[in-house]
Image 1 (cartoon, helix red, strand yellow):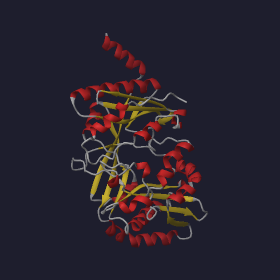
Image 2 (image 1 turned 45 degrees about the vertical axis):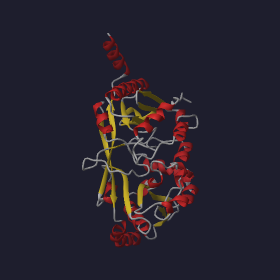
Image 3 (image 1 turned 135 degrees about the vertical axis):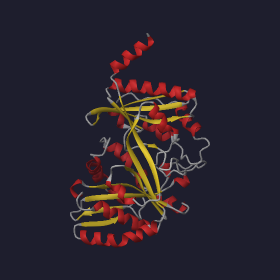
Image 4 (image 1 turned 135 degrees about the horizontal axis):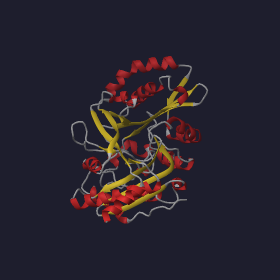
Length: 382
């Protein structure tokens, strides 16, 4: 197992300072992050990590020698925060990123992407200004959240946006569901006899976890920056704490008539009103059974992860699942979000009529080789 960086107390203090007066920040689970940077995480069997702090800023880096994107060896940066936008902090941050980039080049990376915490199973992307130039207030659970200035700071460090992602929120779910009732009935009629559509709850998810592990790898293998993970990592990311948050009323499972899983679309209540500043509730402790009924209205349904088995991608299942999720969610929620969808993904059509649009970015930077960096550093010292 590769060496694991030890996280200092400052690593967590920096984030707390940044958001100390922010009522919308959902907090950071220090114990959970420390477990990620420990021998409990078998990412470190092949992956390597780097983490440092400087004056008022922190950064982590990740390199998996087996990960290549567009035939380039890549490193990721993540867990990035700073305590403020002062000149002293920004200067320290510039030096911190430079040290990370030297480390990444030494590992053999040719390009950097981020923010990505370990891999795309974990949190990634940066919240950007919305289409009106601002940043809406409350953040939903699992949404990137950061100061608006972070995007500009990355660009000043030589990073460019590689992909944009969008969340589109419809604030009248009952009306949207009414529009979809007829086309949903038609789609179900057309697929009758070939596929079986049912609700998906946490117990069903857990009972099918052994089948889902290799299946999800097939479903997402072509996604940008996807990297296979071990079964132990999959269980840690998508096991019981994940499953018990699912909305059993609106999540969708589709099976082929053979019994094989053909697709699923996962929906969650937005639990963020229970996690706002001052709350002691951690994301890992939340469950639908205990907490969904505590959520105030208007409730937001998060349609976050939809996937189709490669063998059935021409069957129209994504559209069917989107409509079915909407109609099943309508009695329980007032709003619905198509969450964190990449700009070129056809599924953006699912919430094309959303009244609120949120924007995110994944950034990239081309690296020079470690040898060139060493020569440049030597020249500067001379």
